[in-house]
Length: 178
Image 1 (cartoon, helix red, strand yellow):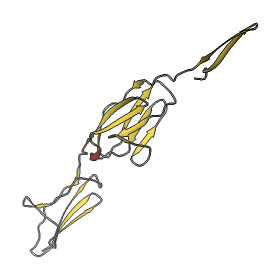
Image 2 (cartoon, one colour; image 1 turned 30 degrees about the horizontal axis):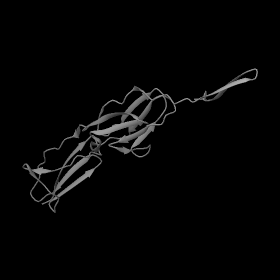
Image 3 (cartoon, one colour; image 1 turned 45 degrees about the horizontal axis):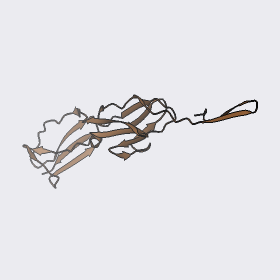
Image 4 (cartoon, one colour; image 1 turned 180 degrees about the vertical axis):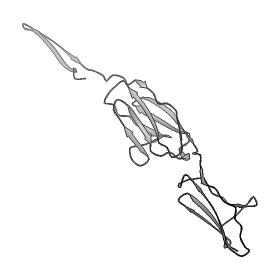
């Protein structure tokens, strides 16, 4: 593009001129986005590279333009990337698209539920009638998003004056009062 301009030649009293206009080279993908699969709460990065430098990508997730900040980090250079900082199950099947003018590439984000591991299991309890008891278990993820339900004889228990349910730092406790 620096070569664009007016060129001329003079030979004696004779002159000839011409203009050179240089169009930007069309953008072509060297590497396109690829579908990505991660477990929830992990980060997910989509990358591509293009034939032309100094072009700005427009990133969209499910059709909405996204920018760096909050949930996303965008980097540009030889490799252009969009990173989801911490995916959730709500991000499952998200369509990620990057556009450079009229050329684009798209891929899908697959989010798999993180397997929860039990660190300490509930223990059997013997008690006298009229005495309160507690059942507890601890899991490896204190921020689990899965719903928690307590049961007695395979029937769901709801919080009440008899049953108190406590969740604290991955430890789940059921307090049974008489």
